[in-house]
Image (cartoon, rainbow, N blue to C red; front, side, top):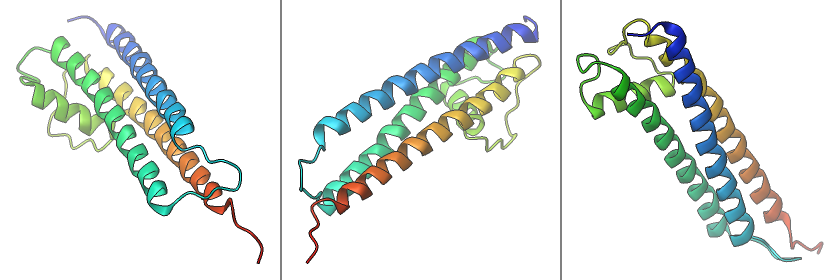
Length: 153
């Protein structure tokens, strides 16, 4: 088994891959929202449309995170001997717990691969923060749009 530096580099490469996935997905989603839900001057957004925007944004972000978690899981499955993570389900479970920083500890990785799990946790924190910021921006924009079209009476 190679030394920890190799696994740190693999972890860094996985961070780049997951950031690219997140960037592509969130860019696509924002462009879609911009085209699909643009309001004309003086128009107001219906409450159900606002709920669709917010709900679908959460789902898109969730799907992106699941894809990113699965990228990490497949890397673990490929890199580790089967006695550590023998199935795709075990690898996915470990990756979910690590990415979300729950860290149950019921599955641990051997030295030096365990260096990757710390990098995955940092990656999950960063991408979770990115998703939170994006969701906040969408909420803020929908609130601004709800105020459009009002007249002083």
